[in-house]
Image (tube, rainbow, N blue to C red; front, side, top):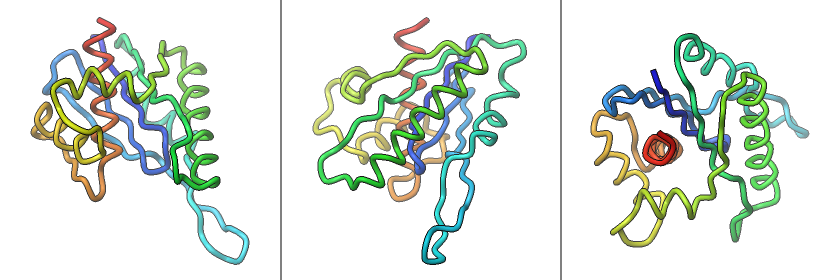
Length: 163
């Protein structure tokens, strides 16, 4: 079966797995591990092992294809946030390559142009709205799950453009 993966690579991102049938949808928050930062604070980073554990069950018997949002700096984004997002982007690409999964890197403007055609300003709220319209049973909300919404839309972008 053809299976599409959509990946929002940030620490607050997600992995969406979409079968050829739109009703066959699975969502996973980015797998994180905790670590001790300087000064005793706890930090979080993506877990490479967790990434593999999420994807591995889908490999046997399926034809996988992944769309990973291309990491780019955003205005008013802090240096630590940019570094974390770029690290996640590289980790996801490495995991996919190591597992032999075909993938594309998709700039936000590209997938949003396709998925938001006819809508207004491209925002996280719009991502959640469009994802809820396309996948009414998906567990997504603006406050907690905009990464899930964007991962779903990336998977759907892959399904529409890479049959």
